[in-house]
Image 1 (cartoon, rainbow, N blue to C red):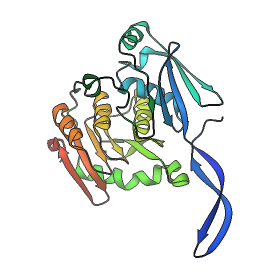
Image 2: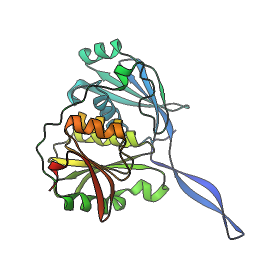
Image 3: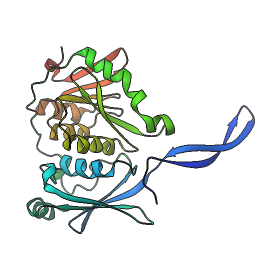
Image 4: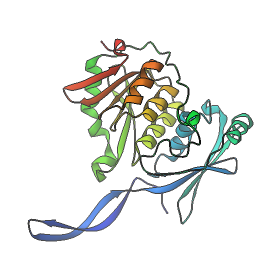
Length: 263
């Protein structure tokens, strides 16, 4: 099983009574297991690209690691059933992980499945400390340019995107995946390994509670989503001090929480 973002398949197109045979590109989706110090922790359905970013971003946004320095190694092992991301982490975070260990199978778009209690599902909010100010024009600039930077989406039409944008709305990093959480985790993992200027995140999905939680875990001050937010996402954004924007389309966006950061 080769890692990558897309696979070429045969297909037949019916159009106005005529059928044409040919081929097409589809987004790759496979089972990816994250294994910490020899113990399997979670299996996610994801696109097998930017896997090191995914491993680090998931570990950080889920609170398994507190910094990139706690990840010592990440090995990608391909099997006939999927891919294992074999992570070697420091002793302290591994000890904490074993205390609250959970086993789950994550489906595409899955977020809180596998949490064993309400306390695990609804975590304590992380307060955003950034004082970054962002203009409406910067949000619009990012929204107008995201589609052109989503190469895998252009090829397959089946993936979500997550972009990191600077204060001027320029797209600095883009990651894609069949799962919206996975795309954001890949982006956060890539960010943790770089020294980019302060900015905000734009995602092509709805703004759910988990998307807000993952964004605040990285102290990013603004999350803009192409689709709507949920009630719990708005509540968490207000509590965390995160500026939450929904329905981010060319020419229009809606501010739902902490709008004082936008000018």
